[in-house]
Amino acid sequence: MMKKVVHLFFVVVGVLLGYQLCPDLFLDVFHLHRSFVTTNWFGAAVGGALFLVATVSLAGYVSALLRWLEERLKSAPLADIVGGTVGMVIGLLVAYLFSPEIRAIPLVGVAVEFFVAVFFAYLGLRIGFTKREELWNLLAGRLSRDRDRAEGGKDKKQALRPGDAKLLDTSVIIDGRIADLVETGFLDGTLVIPSFVLAELQHIADSSDALKRNRGRRGLDILNRIQKESKVQVQIVETDFDDIQEVDAKLVRLAKQMRGKVVTNDFNLNKICELQGVPVLNINDLANALKPVVLPGEELQVHVIKDGKEHNQGVAYLDDGTMIVIEGGREYIGGKITVLVTSVLQTSAGRMIFAKPKLLEKAL
Image (tube, rainbow, N blue to C red; front, side, top):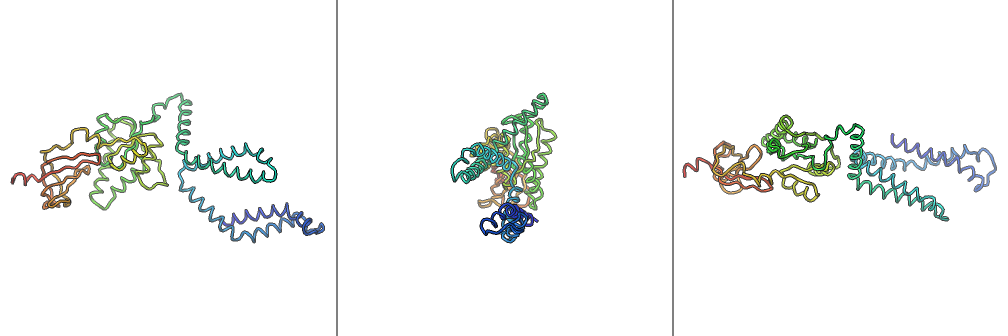
């Protein structure tokens, strides 16, 4: 269908050109006397036929180009399209202001005017695309101020100031300590849960791996607890970025747009936020400054899952995913045992617990 429309466009152009130019061409170049051949309608028929034949192959390339452009526009975020379009329109307006003086240049005025218009349009497109986030925030802020002014400032309390939005990532939700932190009142503002984070949690909860499945379901339970019992406002944001595949990169861009802070315990995401100038609240950094949850000498009942890196070690996990390295625990793989905590290592990358079987302690 697209190819037929393009072909029809070329035929219409040929008809119009033939109607205007062919009669003068027959009279002046071929020196034909005025007859049916030199009429405008005959010229329109000739022009349409010539363009119909000449653009058979060209129509295919043009329609393919239009389809490619259509797919790119479908996949491009709305902010990119709006920013580029606004910039291009501004560039064309600037070029229009200079067009009378440029058109007055002898011989090359029309050509220079065309290239100046193309240049300013491209320049405006690039600037609008580059500054799309600032433009989008400016428009969103202006619309928000106008709405507040129209409603007499009734919704002022609902407007998010810079830093109010706290965006939760998947790891901090699964961790579970965020719910206790919110309940204590140390985390204020609005908790923002992006839709792509919910989708990732759902994917983890549906995993065929039992450990991942339990972690995903734990994350969903934590979210339900936060929504039902939380003292702060919880907001689900449907914003997504189709041009970005990774959840962490989407979270960083959304934090920039909302001028909020990322709440995480992911070491790599923490570094990415720091590099891109996005404020970040690391739960592990907070825990590192406080008393550890598990103290040396405490007893824990754990399920040994696999062997460790060192000889005769076993590895278990707490509900929040914290790794427990058990010295002499390899023989207990697949079973539950009681262990004594020997030491706790807490860093920005997470917490690791070292322990040994209680049975072994009694034997000693």
